[in-house]
Amino acid sequence: MKLRKFVNWIIGAPSFVWLVVFYAIPMLLVFLIAFKPVDPFGGIGEGFTMKTWFDLRNPSYPSIIWRTLWQGVVSTAVCVALSIPISYQLSRMNSKLKNVFLLLIIVPFWTNFLIRIYAWKMFLHPDGAFKHLLVFLGLAQESTTLLYNQWAVLVVMIYTYLPFAVLPIYTAAEKFDFSLLDAAKDLGASSFYAFRRVFLPSISKGIGTAIMVVLIPALGAYLIPDLVGGPTSELIGDKIAQRVFSDRNLPHASALSALLMFVVFLPLVLTSWIKKLQQKKQKSE
Image (cartoon, rainbow, N blue to C red; front, side, top):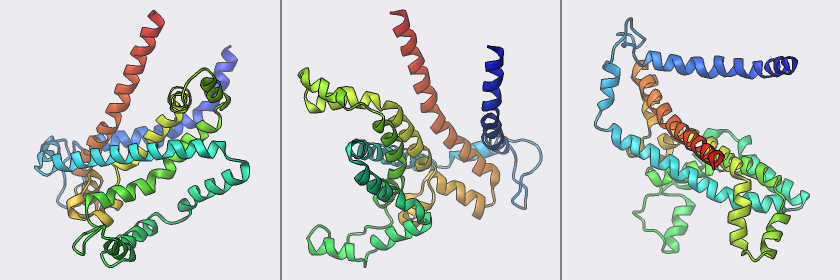
């Protein structure tokens, strides 16, 4: 038993070291820098101060935080909602069709992220073909602006992060035994009821992974709102980038980053706590 534990520790040691060096330590440094003053040259001053945290009372921040939260949550929900039926159909296809569609899903990763955003910027341009088509069909007016608003940001975010949701859900769906759905139907369940009560619980881990993989980058996005959203669609990520590159205020950027990490970790902690309570309740029953 001791030998097995030692072997497991040796196997897990590289991953543990990786998490400590490239995740835990940088996160700790971000929190520490948030309590440091700014020197006149845009660096980190000596001593500690709470001024940076008091500066977060900027009147524009509540609206930016709210915009970041709702766009992150909505884009994640849409990506997951689209990924479930896509993954369901993919997992039931024959091998040849499945490989073709998986390739089409992965192809965007072969293109530079900036190029994909600029492609959407050209697609939604006021003088673009798509805008003229909508006007011709009567679905938009000449004064309608498809770019530089929060809806353009939301559309591009969904497009960008959709593959990140499809792949983990598809991985879970591929392992599902679809004969269970037929058994549920034989027992009188409708197709939708069997899908909801048999299929979805079986791929819940894939759905949970997809939510985390999409939600975290969506909350920290800054290139997408910067390029297609304009000044009225700023997210927390934009403010962090401004404080780092334009203002050279690293403590303020660190404080905003710490706030963003808190927003991300709080739901994770609450979800874990609720699951533990449910498990204890089930064991007691």
